[in-house]
Figure 1: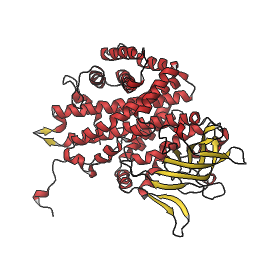
Figure 2: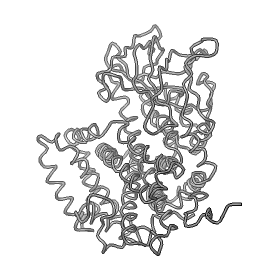
Figure 3: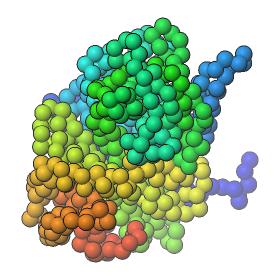
Figure 4: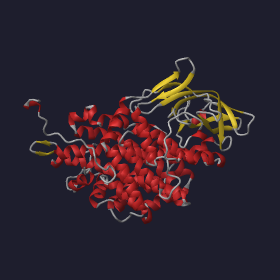
Length: 547
């Protein structure tokens, strides 16, 4: 029996056994806002089921186990045969199976699919972000494969399946498959046009033999991969199956797994091709154009993933401070801590609202809305740039709200902190996104028109937003020598769009706090510097997860 000195008091209960979806007011409101009335009841019920799964103790334990047991590469079997397999902890497979069955690879085949899937992905990231990588790649491969109707007919039904089949065997024998991606090489990185992997045409039309390397291949245990290589006609996109139709293993030499800062449960590899069989996707020389839709989808997932990490960090901080007492009262009731929590909550809600708006734009664009498609062209890189960069400071500040407890692995906050820089780096780091914003502004006038129409819907509702829109228009009027200030421009585009969405759709106290601090300059550089005249208690209460 524990002695009296070991009695535990003044500690928050674990944040578990709750519905992650219904506890997130910003997320539930966004789903209701962006889905047609006839889809809402079904979607809300489905997402609540996913939310309960995310909040369940068993699922959270699987996330911790998968993170604590990184994958292991096995290049050879006991007899010396080359097998190039990756072994994962059983918890990884359980999580991946639940993610697939929750529809996180199935956004393309049903009305409102992107909004529904985005909400699920944002929640699933909060359980264990590592397994979201193959879910994202599989989801994003669909639009690229549609460049070849025959390939799409063969592969898309398996990609969008809700069946997780972990066995390595021919895809024709599987009810569901996962996809990875291999674009970057040692000498090029983000400059994929520097790729040197070669593609030699074979006798069968549309087939090639690849020779070369990929410095960063995502999800190497997958059933297929989209890769870029140089065919006679130029840089081209290819589908590389892991197992060939006759059951033999394709030449897919995994040289090593990356030892990463975070994202520990997920395998990222360096791979070599040596006469590797591949099928061309799209036309020769059109590789970048073929994969651009895939890249856009994965970049949106970076936004959603960061929004999910921020939401979980804020939920943990608000939950802890709602129970923890210090200096004569609850931490959450102390004016300074309330300021910190409210500031974090505003950042989290702004990320969620923006990510879900872009998911809705994907649904509309898929239905033929060209204005929404144009909006995505500018808003996705701006959002990817800004939201992903806000994730790390939010996670670190949230950990600090727990004090020393937040620095201990068992709290889960260190895992969020390590994961927080990832989405800013992957799928094109900050400079790549900022330059993409400039390209959209310079080459696609419809993109800026769509953006200004979107933010213009909120003009007149808040004087600080109106002033920020005017300042942005001044910036956009002169894009000469803009590369040196491309980051600032991307930041302002994202902030103004977030402000416009919050003014239109968030409670007044949230929109007021955002516009005052992010657009009006009435706040400091660190979190917890909001004007004390704001209704911060209401902001914190809105962010509190109800268990």
